[in-house]
Amino acid sequence: MTHWIVDGMNVIGSRPDGWWRDRPGAMRRLAGELDRWAGAEQERVTLVLDGRERDLGEHANVEVRFAPVADDLITEIAGPGATVVTSDRGLIERLGGAKVEGPKTFRERLG
Image 1 (cartoon, rainbow, N blue to C red):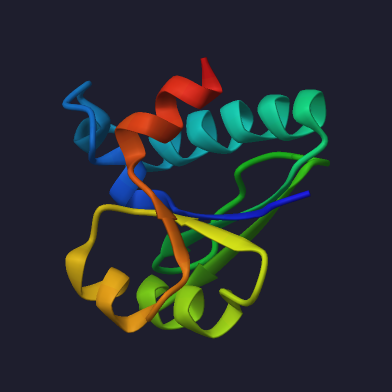
Image 2 (tube, rainbow, N blue to C red; image 1 turned 90 degrees about the horizontal axis):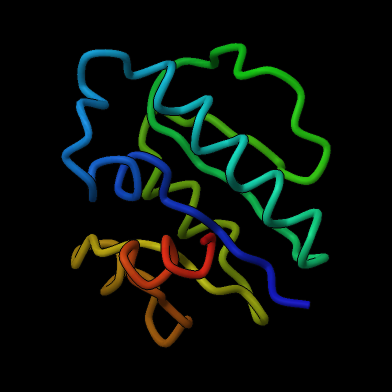
């Protein structure tokens, strides 16, 4: 089982679907998509979002974490066996040799 660590705002921002008009709604939608996928695929998923904690509803298959700087938390928790979903070059450099998957590829995985 892979531990997927999702750079939430990076993934949300990868599609110009109007997410900026309802940032909390976009966060909720992504958490829901991840929850369904993680449950079906039996994968471990941590969704990391920038900013203050928000109520995104219940998501039994996803650990949702908030941080003032998401990249710092992602760097801290990305250990062996983790794959980080991001296209943030600065974050990728900070991760060293950790496995990385881009948001577009990951979105295709979600279906």
